[in-house]
Length: 295
Image (cartoon, rainbow, N blue to C red; front, side, top):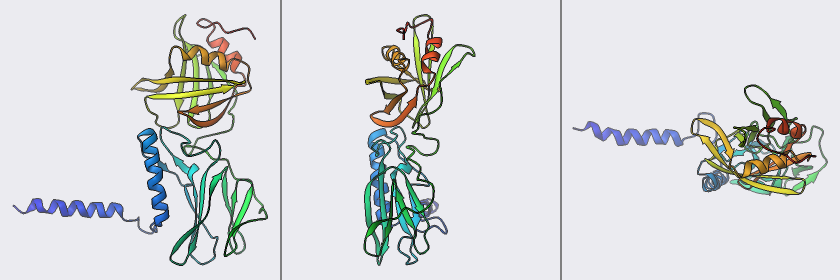
């Protein structure tokens, strides 16, 4: 029987097809492939899941007008599932700029930046890194006059939908049970507080990306910092609940009257969560299960 011998050859052909670049898409340079491998290893070590490389991770620009695209890498475009913002320092994320040279690429910039934009110029593009405009002069990557246009957006850890700015006001949802709810920053989509019986305050978290079954969330407001463990409620529901000891303390902190609370997931900063209306909504939602101090 010779037919089984065809299987290894067929499998090898399929794998070769998977590794080849898509039709019309140039292969990525070795520098980018190596960087992707390092980021993948970092995400796997932090969360056990591979990263998702968004469209803003690698952008092409015309910095050296030689007909070969130059490359701008923005790590804010990497969604490290379960470990949002793993490679960033708050709103600043690693950025690397590669200029094409004979035989390959030369890295001309490597640093942490809050926001990246590429602006076209008459002969070559300008890269706006935070509040600096940079261009390649043929020998060096130097600062130039800021071109017209809107400032670059701040990094959004975790891809589309993530936000670092403080969201809108809290609200009291009265359908079924009174629930205080607020939209969170970064990978924290929503916080909800309600009573599960007369003695049991509940704090629930929902996330924008898949997360491990156990998540540590840190809250910092008004000079006070509080860290609590959140566990996935059931395998069928995408909600995590704070442990019984942490829930009352979280409620007291959020209802304390601060203007915003800084959020971190597993040690990685997510940004500020607005607390407008939080005190009134939380007091109303938890009135029958938790006594909050008078303001």
